[in-house]
Image (cartoon, rainbow, N blue to C red; front, side, top):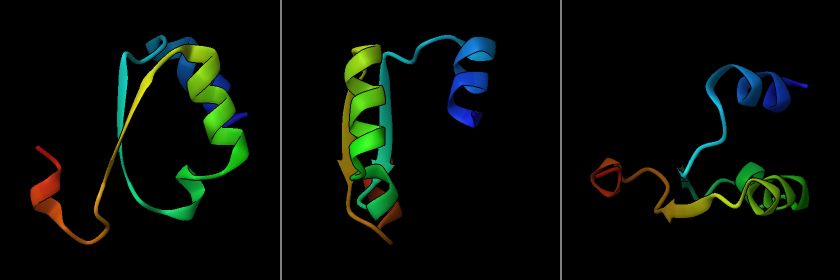
Length: 52
């Protein structure tokens, strides 16, 4: 899928910054983050100031 293709091209991220959207709270996304051992940072949706 898209996640596997992205990972093969760019490598495993050390950290991922996401908003609080439901797609980032899914069981699949959590499993991917755990398997990659990537740190997940969640910001407030619709608040670009949190993207720093």
